[in-house]
Image (cartoon, rainbow, N blue to C red; front, side):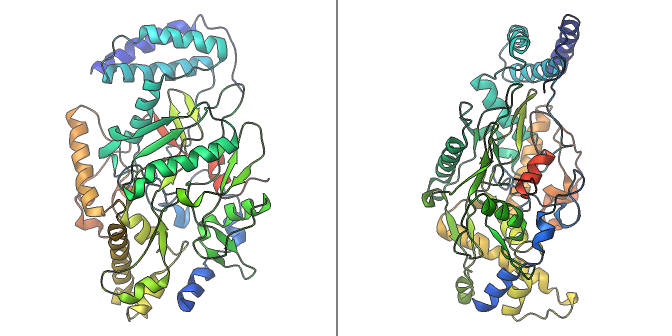
Length: 460
């Protein structure tokens, strides 16, 4: 109630100020290897620009690995904060001031910093002079954390207030962004003790755009299109892989798990590729607690799900390059990345190795193979000493988060289809209740052109 009253009062003040505003307008193994190399989607389809702004078909519940915190890494890994309605940040001075006022009121009220009027007056003067305004460090930290708190698709929001923020708003050059992104991975990894972290680079301004990272995540595996229409590696990344090759990347060894370079575009420049240093990428080799033959399959996955192509929107300001990560929930890897038919599609191969009857779905061979694949992920990460969580634990923790927020009078928005885990849904407590999808700011947002860049669909 306190926040709502302050917001109404400040909104009235903004309306009054608008009447005095000058009109500035808008500112502008052989068997397995064969399956891994076969892929399922043709390269042409993967690189074709998507129609419309929403996800369709098999991609509806995927996206980049985008959760932050336990199980809040990113997309097909189901860690993706909801892209909302592809909002664009306000451009007209009056709209920008209103967005700033709402954010500053929320910040100063929740953190008990006193009357926001003085800060708003300074913001108004800065917008009048430059067409935008700069957040204080404290505002930036608060905004990044609350954007995580507002992420409807993230089950790991219990940890929102522990997000560490690296303020790199001085960085615009593509090479410096690449170097800082590698440092982000090193700092987040900590020899396997994964830390929730965000690095915020320069924002968009009326004078020039901020840098863009094309990759969905800082670490992604290449997908090499083959003449037969198949893909070696991760089919999801075939478009970006082709784009990187056109930019001059020579490609990796050609395995199913070649780490993609970062493709970064700085202010007004052409995109460039940057190889990630080996010491910045921790990977986990996948074995199994029972089957000794599993390790010989050569499966692996990277340890840090750092989403890198979502815009962090705070108070009307867009930070288009703000890579952030938490740690993986096992199902993101075992039930999505390695199992989805448009990704590595390993279930038929695993079922065959397990001796399961794949002639009929009634044998539940998919379910049994899926469980073993997820056991492999949890077992391997634990054995390697790398932070990972499981869907049962995270479901309980999400309800804890729900209770805490409701106790503070803050309704929690959630997308049921993303909160419920992709396996054993009804065995988790989040399955048995409903949620309201409430869009709030600050937020992490997918803009359509960012998704096109991640698909390599924007002409070079």
